[in-house]
Amino acid sequence: MSLPPLVEPADSLSADEVRRYSRHLIIPDVGMSGQKRLKNARVLCVGAGGLGSPALMYLAAAGVGTLGIVEFDVVDESNLQRQIIHGQSDVGRSKAESARDSVKEINPYVDVILHEERLDSSNVMPLFAQYDLIVDGTDNFATRYLVNDACVLLGKPYVWGSIYRFDGQASVFWAEHGPCYRCLYPEPPPPGMVPSCAEGGVLGVLCASIGSIQVTEAIKLITGIGDPLLGRLKVYDALEMDYREVRIRKDPNCAICGPNATVTELIDYDAFCGVISDAAAEAARNSTISVHELKEMLDARERGERDFVLIDVREPIEWEIATIDGAEFIPKGEFLDGSALEKLPQDKPIVLHCKVGGRSAEVLAVLHGAGFSDAVHVGGGINAWSLQVDPETPYY
Image (cartoon, rainbow, N blue to C red; front, top):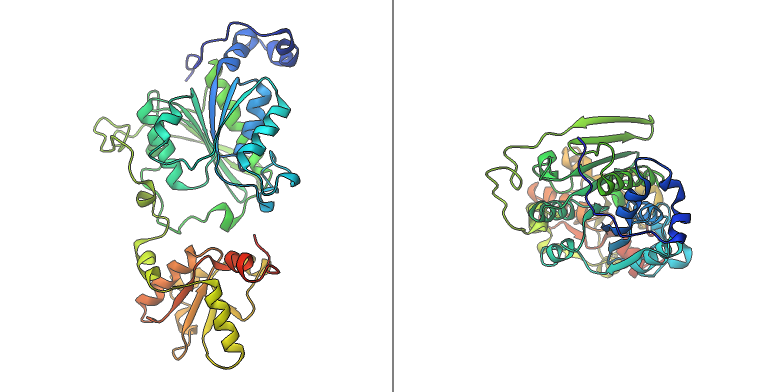
């Protein structure tokens, strides 16, 4: 379904801009009119990470006149495998500032506006209202639903992308002309059910594959050319080098864009999606220890003054990357299916840890439910151990 151009054209292009964009200008479907629309467009990119990196770079190269960047994080060395807008010298810098500098180096004619804040229900509406189009590069469900709901309430289109390991997805959501994200995913998955990229990993170059699709769709919407991915979900399997397409229909019972919508304003998205389950939160409430407390416990065990079992509940590939000396390995899945329970000692306290604390809290709830009431878990996980106790332990 073709749509009218999203943006009116700018008055003119300078001689320098004509030279820069000449390969666009000689494409009949783009031409001077399309390039002037790109110049006049205001696009907000939510995130300057894996998807935001190629998206921002190609939006800048394409000549989008104003680029907003929502990003509050700093560049970490683990980002550089896929977040190509940042370099080694940017480690420790604001991601937003690093991205701005890269964008200005690619195209000095682009106006870059930084929004160095965490996107939430209190700031999203006035922020999105300043832009014509949103490009969603987020990696968590709470922010995805926030972006969707704000766009629906404001009548804004947005281009969505998602990546995990070797798989990617992309689509366009615009409730005025088709389905929204809630039409595709009415409810978020249960907490802990879908690992994040930080937990499961992602092939670095996959970001470019999906990010470039997002930019292509943004250009099509701005200029009014082609058939956008509205009502279509593009699914990419990098291992098989296979693209397939799934049709998405507007859900008449959608909670926010249906005729009988029940969501008429922004909600608490962390509560809606659940960072961890209620059971895990309750289990961890009075059963969480710090990495410094764990260090004291391990030292006491080494001296023979106390005894306990430290269990790492991460995945096997993570166990190969980094371990805490003295830990035993039983992955989370074995606790969820019950097979791990028979391996546990009945006469020793149990201490659990994972990467950052979320998965160990879920396992803690299982153990408390099975009668291991004195079990505890380590807040912050092995990454906190690396940062606060033992820098020799790899941080990933």
